[in-house]
Image 1 (cartoon, rainbow, N blue to C red):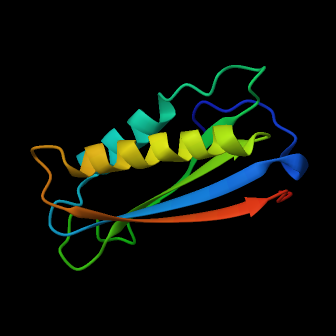
Image 2: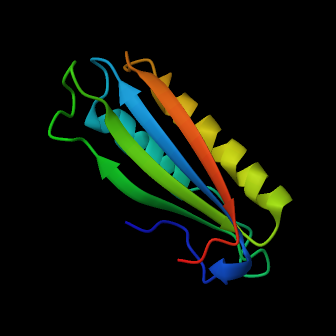
Length: 121
């Protein structure tokens, strides 16, 4: 699924990969969906900004809503500006925390952020 993306010269861009694992009994579809929708709704600034946010994968490993397994959401952020990329990463992280802190949610979220400059796809 691709949300809010624009074309971008990724060979000369800053790239972040954000992995969020929702763990615990509350790692249910509604929480993952809320996080994905919130991330997809983030403003990337239009074509002049040339930044993009994409929800790359939602992986439940067959255990969505089960106590034993986390449900994962992977998001990628691309921008030619390191400052803009970092701002978008902060917004994505806020969305993930907000989803995990929904009143109906009893799961925790573990977030990992990896950065690679000039990573060609």
